[in-house]
Length: 197
Image 1: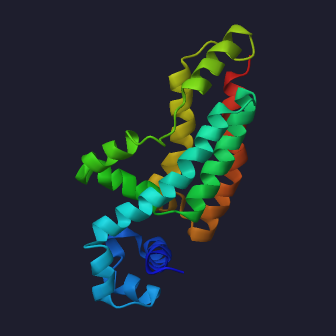
Image 2 (image 1 turned 135 degrees about the horizontal axis):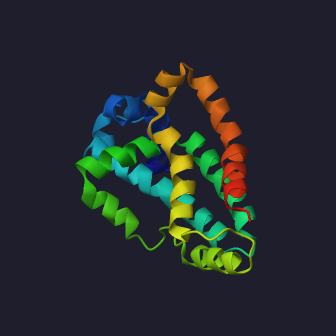
């Protein structure tokens, strides 16, 4: 394993445990089994390291999403697959949604660089397919972009607002994760039932 791979693995572990704000470069260096000077040689600060970790994770997620969007499956099948795969991914990388919210406020240039990245999700094929299935009488008349916004909102929000969700519902980490597992099916079924003609 290269030094960079050790750093990425260590950073991912520490960010998952402590979040971005709570993580310390010394902890990441210790987890990677290197000294802090070596860590700073590779990444000058925590922000730069987190952005690199985020981009690595994003480069894994975006192609998965595009594969779903561009597949030959029906819209209903794609909704099921998207909620399953997105929730699975975020359960494995729970620090990512909160980081994006933070960066939208503190570092909008970085967020725009993600949204302009060549591997970003491209929903054009799915939008066209939704319009076709509306014309075929499979889906109720609706704005495809509103449908996508509903899907994204229902899957992303609980993770982005995880602390608030746990506080309001009075649940612990284990109960939260169990609810997210259940949402893989609940979200898809609720959305499909609401749009099915």
